[in-house]
Image (spheres, rainbow, N blue to C red):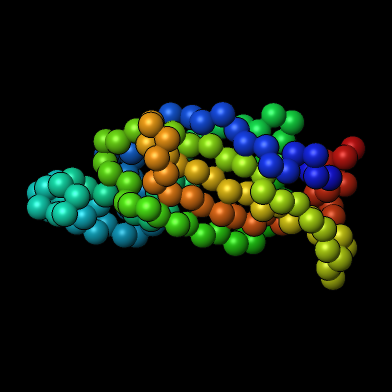
Length: 149
């Protein structure tokens, strides 16, 4: 279904680790650690400023892969993992993009399932990698049928 798009990557999109957004995100996930929110703690840290929680990149815009359209409902979140080269710093600019790494299908109890492997990248404006996120999105047979009609 998506085989022709494997290996394609979106154009990077500029994002900023904004203090207000980070504060709202921290509250929403129930982790109000001082390293995220207290400016004096951030200044005394080895980073010299506050950092973002590990899952904060979920709020970033990663752009769109041309021709890759998924429905907004009916998808199953299979797996997600983050790998960091260093923490995200409050106030910094992050260039984010996404790529379709793989797609395969398997028969399940409820029919044929599609498995999308997506990889997201967060880089400094100069191109140095900050983090990657990998996720598996599962597409049920019912959703797949709706997409093809």
